[in-house]
Length: 292
Image (tube, rainbow, N blue to C red; front, side, top):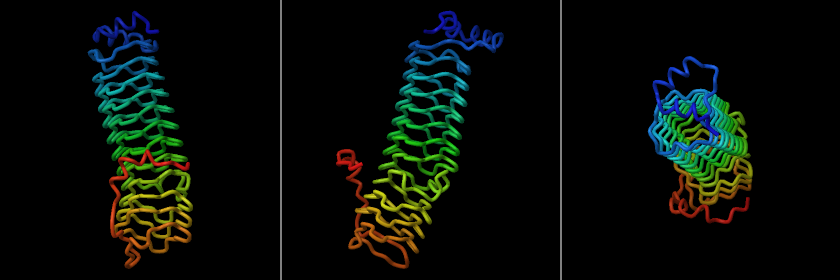
């Protein structure tokens, strides 16, 4: 439960700021309190214990949450544009549909966080821990994900377009029907081995997959518009209804792979589909029987 004196100070910005300056070593306790929809009294929230607190629909743009404890807190639909959560403990936090463009979450712990439908364009997630987090339909376009831990994330239908994943751990990530165009998956910690990823239906347009190990993968309905598959190992992969458009395939291995060759034209080591892409499948993909 929140400390009532701390809560009283919190709603008086000048008193709060003066008290924080005088007592920098005290961790304010705002835990288990419901502040949803209320006025934002201060943006100086660094080092606060707000675990289990509710901040739904609040305007927290530019707020400083560095080092804060927000374990199990709920901030759905909150405005967090350019806010900073560097080094914060956000395990199990609910940020559903939050507006988080430009947010700084470097080294933050987001294990098991619920980030569905969150907008995090240009976010800074360097070395953040997102193991087992839910990112379904999230938008992380042009975000900095270097060194982040995405092992086991549930990120179907998300948009990680033109993101930097250098050194990130993507082990077991679920990117089905995600938009990964211009994101160099080969720069991740897992290197050329993409066999641990779930990529069915994903958009991999203009993506570097040169020399990638993709044997026996479920790649049904993926979009490979202008992707670079030169030297890739696709033996045994299922590419049924995959969409090709000027896709580079020189040296790629397709032995035992399922490809609709009767619907594809190959010219000068470029593959181009004669029909597709299959946009209608986006609406019903989750209804398909998943053999996994």
